[in-house]
Length: 196
Image 1 (cartoon, rainbow, N blue to C red):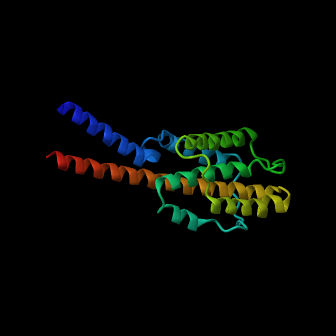
Image 2: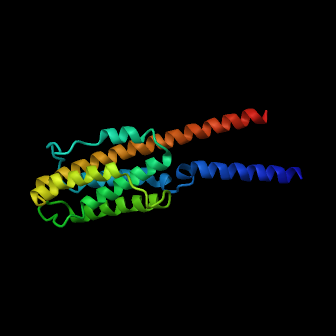
Image 3: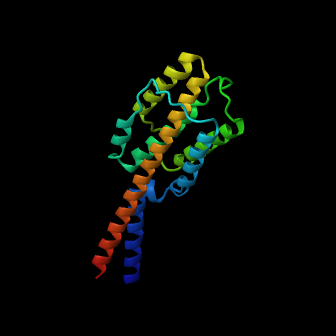
């Protein structure tokens, strides 16, 4: 009887942990994120020459990144996935022929972004999106690629902004991982204290 009670308690604890921390602890993608993030950052840098010094015609959404840090982990993961989808969407523009990027490196970059997006689809509902982020990317695309007809300068701006977003997403995932590690440590301390 006592063993059954302990088993029920452990099962209940596991269910509570997985339901409340599913996006963090039960998401395989987070374990692979560091490698995929480093790969995508390296590839976006290598696919062209030095990044442009030109300023983007659309302000970077720093406020969105600051606000999302205070949201739930699930909302943060949706934000990351939406960002990755929208970054990849920029490169689906009709004409990249004006820019002399390495084709193989560019395709590997896009495949890495797709791998990250696919991994996140297993962690969060696919029907959720971040609308403000979508508006920002639409303005970015309109102000660069559509306004110039896909000029080399506009593509270089897209590459520069893509790298900036990937770096910010890396910081966001780092804060998610730090928060989950701190929460796990707190639970272990409380569990040890109650067992004494």
